[in-house]
Length: 208
Image 1: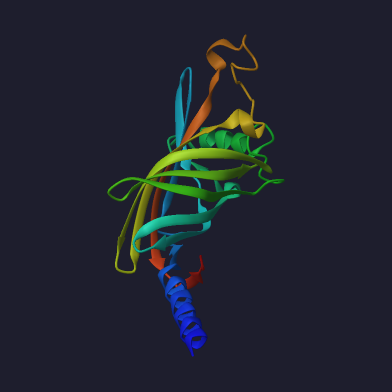
Image 2: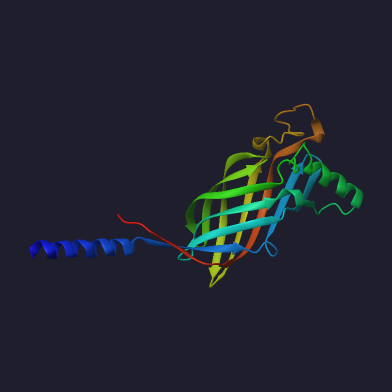
């Protein structure tokens, strides 16, 4: 009888532990039409900016807190927005899509997988991830602000990327010291503004 009671208590404790450690992750699907990814690159004589469409994206949230996510961006449809002259705009856009830069015919998409998220304040996080461009994957880290309201989510982040890590060395002073005022900065920025909506949730349970 005593063994039966102990067994029942053990099962109850196990069940409680399982319930306590259940993690409910709610995936939020990024609205690719309302979200925006703005690139900005600087050079000695000025700077250029434009847009990169988001092909798909998901953010994982648990109890209103960011836990992870993944994205795919459409480099093949990259645009330049600061040049109003159609001829110059086309020339720069074509160059950026070519072999000197993103080689979009061979590598039409880029990917970002979030690997860790550390809260740093109200709705603020330090995010680490793996960014893939031109088939090369490197670590990235950046601050982000994520807010959830019911089934809606907004997120903002600024990611600084060293293009030379992805084999993009065109007019880099690091590799071509004598190029003078033709030098282009090794880093460029991506300003990320996301709007997402909660989709079907998934539940994960762990037992200690």
